[in-house]
Image: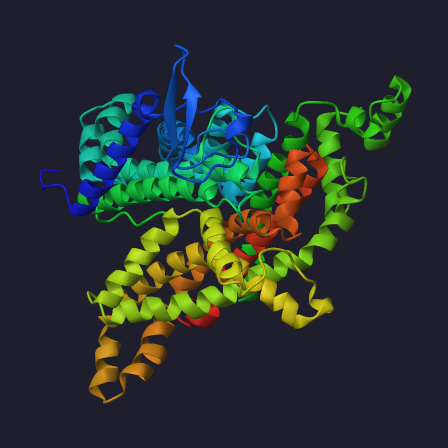
Length: 286
Length: 313
């Protein structure tokens, strides 16, 4: 931990910092309301400028940096607001999956009687390709942020459980655990003071990769039309809107696509760098 | 060998049981009464009750599950709510495009990723190595549909070399069939190449330092035979394992790629079925894909004994 941060962590972190800032400052950065439909301004090319009447009744010029979609909504403003959804989904899924995976993994690794059952259930969940399970799960309830997050968490948890369990199985054989047991440490204290802290470094790395895959998965769900409805702009549903007129107006897919790819790349770089730095033994999740 | 195959087959039973429970629950947890959905808007309550009895929805849950499993094992997935057709027929209609796309992608991936990975490991630290590693991080990060649209824009719209979208059955002409599969296969292969090239590089690097490789070089064998016969052969087990695991990525990619390119395959069917809340179809497609995934990984496990004769069970 004392080593200086490596290039991958710095670069990934810096890009991610910019994306977070964009998300937080979305109301300041956006040039128009991202959900206002304007039939007079449909399908503008990027850079198109036009005059609108402001709240005070005076006309002002608005430039559509990334053009407008087929409903006349400003793509730039939607992309800027879209950063919020991606980040919220990525971070929430990473935290929830890590927490759930830690608890279930501890149980499987420490309570030997439950190990078999828990791991067979996890194997079964992992046998269903992640995107399909998520698609099946979102179809169960009304589309929205919460159902999308839940639908992404469930396929991600088994991978975390597997990691934590294997860590716990090796940690419990360590001499310091034996020593703590010999000194009369009770199980909760033992887990809290000796086992959990030693799972954290790999868990953080794993959570970063979960975050990247969650951002991608949310975009895929929204792109397919089963994720977050278009009232809330997300990079995925902006692209979904752009599909019909893609041949003429590729910008609706291009700009959110670039933002999405760069953000996921940054998170992956952060994860790769953290892995090298925190624990060189952990192999990349596949 | 035979007892091993038997044990390995037995081990897939609990996995498939969990998959079955999850998939069965999808229909049960879904909002709405399936009988009412099938009966339609103008049905009387007697109609609904009759359908309910016909589908066995009035029986205890465990019994329903048993009946459902019994039917599914015989290939009967029930009737689609939306397409008003047997789900099994629906799936059979859609298998060809998905199979064609998957096989093309798999061939393309292995043809590209394995040589790239070997080259990167062999020239470790060179620009080739850095390019391959850079590509593999990038491949993980760019979403499949963005790659798809960029390729469509460049090769189908700007250059007009290939058709934009669509699918042609292989029976209607091999030329048109292949022409329409080029872009989707490349699209789908990007993430898969990233995955396989990375593991090939790592696996080959480990073997390159082994004593037998030094011996092979010392006896004057050329680099190519060394790489192919002594290195790749020994690096094969992890590569094949990751190809097996990667099938999950491939299946996920199929769903997205078929939507981007308008290919009427199983992936497109999944999305259409979800949008139409057609749960029997959603269930069936998820189940079929999961079974395929589990079976492929079973084959991968069994291939170890062929790839590495030291592995004995």
